[in-house]
Image 1 (cartoon, rainbow, N blue to C red):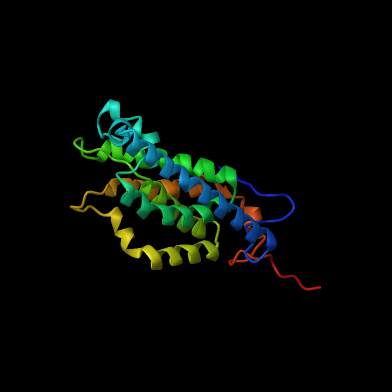
Image 2 (cartoon, rainbow, N blue to C red):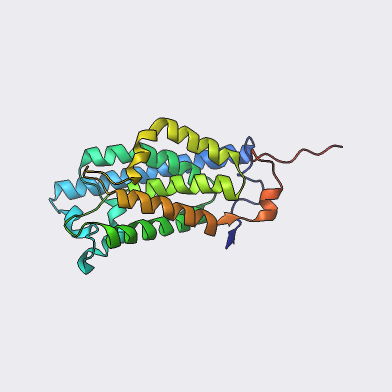
Length: 220
């Protein structure tokens, strides 16, 4: 499956153009509006003592915990958990969303399904898994894979920046004794790879720009 998304008046994928910066700015504003909704959910959970983490989280291998595949990315195990996810979610989500709203929504759905089902099948049945970290790793997988399949050095640059800022968190895809779902991270990353391939840009469109994502230079 290929994807063609973006305003007809300009290509927001071309690095350095006004359309590119405008798309990036709108995406940043949108992500900054989404994250407060997660804080609202946490505030309701804490204020009403609703225990949403337990009732709506992923409980591996149990049918009653299967609905958590869809709900768990919106829930967090306390404020510190939510704080730690907020900045990388805004940062990575901005660059993924800037490539197109429809691509962003479908890609996020694929990541949620792959990450959530991966946790449900492989996680410990004595655990409850919540948090947006699977989606965050999925966005990282999207940017990395787009750099390969769409031959975009711009996406590689973003991944390098994130690696410099949060490189230590990338170890979260490996098994650990800490109380984190490394399965969610690993399958989220794989979900991002799948989404990037499924919703890649058209080859003809990608070929019309250089490896930095800029318009091709032609001689008069």
